[in-house]
Amino acid sequence: MSRREKIEIDFARSLERAQELEDMAARLYELAKNGIPGTLQMIAEGFGGENGTRFREKSAKMEPALLTLADRMMIAARNIRFSAEVIYRAEKSAEMIF
Image 1 (cartoon, helix red, strand yellow):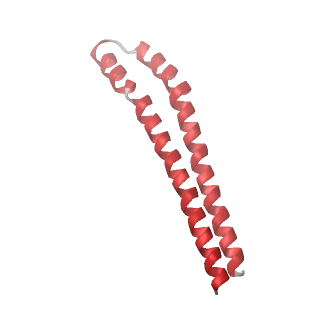
Image 2 (spheres, rainbow, N blue to C red):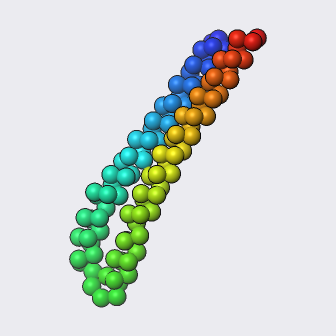
Image 3 (cartoon, rainbow, N blue to C red):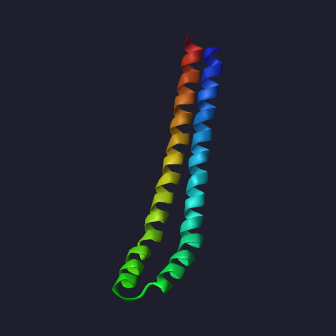
């Protein structure tokens, strides 16, 4: 495999990984917004007393935490894309020099 092919393959892999991370973040966001709240509400309705109160308090913190995680995953994906582009350009420039 030539150096040029390796550069192209590495760049493509980096972009694929960034896309996978974005896809996971989107699924996590969707789950946090639409899947978990309803499920937690159903479970909470089955709990009574002090345990039910604690469950509701703790589960109320899940959605914001998951949304924050999804945001961080999106930022990481953007950083991967940016870094891949910088490295790709540097390697292509270096290839021209040598």
